[in-house]
Image (cartoon, rainbow, N blue to C red):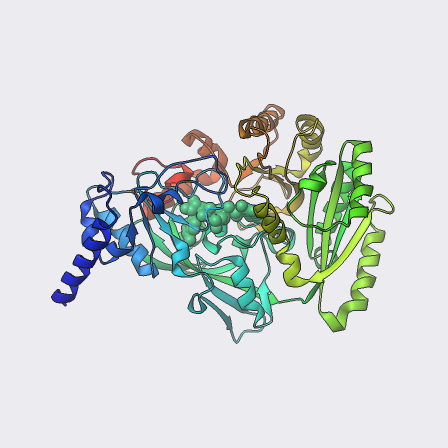
Length: 519
Ligand code: FAD
């Protein structure tokens, strides 16, 4: 064993010295003696990729990147930092789809979770428990939802709750919430988890659930990476439908649009399986990357209406079904549902697509934008949850006010969710009202300076504050601990206590900028 240890040390030394970079002053040299030293990259080429994210707004280089081959490697790194007299920050990086530097680790180590292997067969496994209707998948925290989908479909099953875009990681979305048009019915993705494997800020590997260490389990769900690195999540599954009737309905009046959305979410399984909505301004129809749903003729028609009214609202719904048994029943159901809604006559559009095609609908847009060089541009996104009681004020002040005249490039999403589908013990926060709206201003700075769009975001937040709208940021971003305290409200004390218990040296996910020193 001592011979093997010596060989491992020499190999690590050669690997690190070979990178020809002076040893970073923020990292203890003892890292060289660890078995994982060979997986630590120091070259500027390697660290550059981990110095920014999808947002392209924040930039800060880590001292090093760890490319782990197993969760044990991550635990070894965290244990080493925790016990060192010179502890350093560590950020798990899912796929870097944050927009404000949340997955950066300035001067510390970024853990490139992808190196655990996307789609690796032994990192995604489907199980059937004997109890009826109890199916689940164990997926590595690094896994992309698209790979989880493909693997579970081999068993005729699929997760119940989704994000709109599937090239996000399990660990990254569970650290936030994971929301889409299914959340009104099944809750966000964090409401659909049975168990987690977590590496805490002390380097302990803990399996937690509602029964076992619930403080850690609920803390981590929506916990912004503050208490541990998720290396496995056990996620609830349901029988997967095969096809989807997918509708988009156009409204010229916000009141009827939101009334219909609220009606649909109150119907639960008697209504749609998925409910979302968006604001369409004439040119967002063209630049919108979220799907090519509308035909050219339909786009022209809607553009005409949007030009006449300044903007229109688009309610998006989906009914899932099984191919053979249900095709005629789904037509009937859809017909009855549409009869109850008050969209503009002649402005209801229907598509019929495969279940995978529906869930993966945003990917085509990504491919298109990438080919045009418009994907890797600054994204000053703003996501907020607005209570139902103030959504009309928000519409007047923001959609009809701040966003007009429209200079927006990118989708503006608007859809309601239900608070009782969010477990109150979880770290994620929502407004204090039974129904609240998710508003996503997903704008790209293509021609404009991104600061202009960001200033507009500030105007929107300022408007909400002045009007006393009790909103919550989703994928939150704050500069001071006082703002974080306000954000978490009554959950703040528990959040700090959980941090003290599981990451007392504040090593994890420093890019969230919640804790800047040991507790
Ligand atoms: P990263 O950005 O890499 O990480 C996010 C945070 O989580 C960081 O603080 C990081 O340190 C931490 N983290 C990462 N992995 C782990 C882990 N295994 N354990 C603990 N902490 C970890 N969100 C929605 O809810 N619904 C949507 O429909 C949606 N659509 C999106 C579409 C696009 C095109 C993009 C770019 C983002 C979208 N998001 C959506 C936001 C997305 O949920 C967040 O970006 C989220 O952070 C996931 O991205 P990621 O997996 O790349 O995580």
